[in-house]
Length: 369
Image (tube, rainbow, N blue to C red; front, side, top):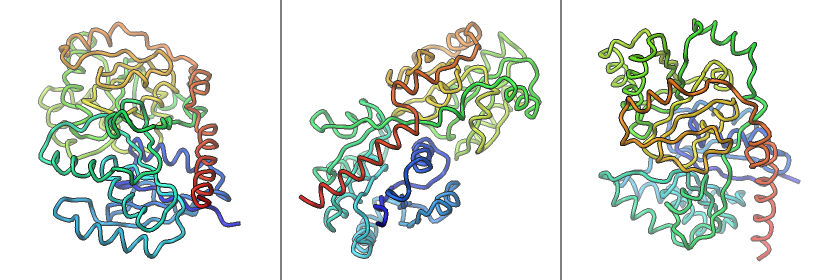
């Protein structure tokens, strides 16, 4: 019996939060029963593309979703689903833009169509009218509504839809605190016995790096040997690098770029700083908690993210000095949080089994109907 092919719809399979979550599940599912393929919206290859293909997945490339490009995009979607009758499940992670692919999937008879919300806000910008249009197209094109948190579900689907929260699970064992590994990684990074603050996230407006650097600058005023590790890349990175240089912090801020060894880097960190403007439920905060770290986060992040009691929330209206004072006085002791994450459904192994059964059950039942 051939496996059921599930089409995962994303922008590009780089090392972002939802992409990492998808790969966590993909590695764990029984691929004799379920096989993931990916529809991406960039021509360039993503960081995970090689691994996807090694696991038996196919990658289909579509044009970017742009208002001036709608007609071409809709035609490409119709062509795609007319040619690919093998998909029993389409699982779209493009927030409001999921409406377009799910409308086409419905037109061509795909039985299980999942819209998945990964954010709780997008702010107001020039794209807002097009986002509202896309959200209106959503209607009843999905058969299922998923979200990474209750807030993310309400934001995209409203109160009337029955939303299933699919936890952003992680491989807990990979993140368990290891003192020997901590010493090894800190040595590789030339870190002495000093306070290390960590942040992992794409350099874009959402992650609020400007304020993050202000906070760290205030930390330095109180603890001059502190170090900041910034992991990730993005279009605002040069701007943040210039700010760091202007403040005279270049020797105390390490820009590490995109990394594959996130579980190891978490071992080197003492505290995790995450002042985002908005989020859904960030995978990286689950990872930080799995590593037993205390986290200082903005109150724009859902309280659902505090799985272990190790998140402390602060207002973005507070000054950088207030945030810095909290950091200086916070415990840097790591804790074993594995049982809490497992009991709350954040273990990839357990949740991958649930997701596999969901795909199987719904694709079969809906075909029969």
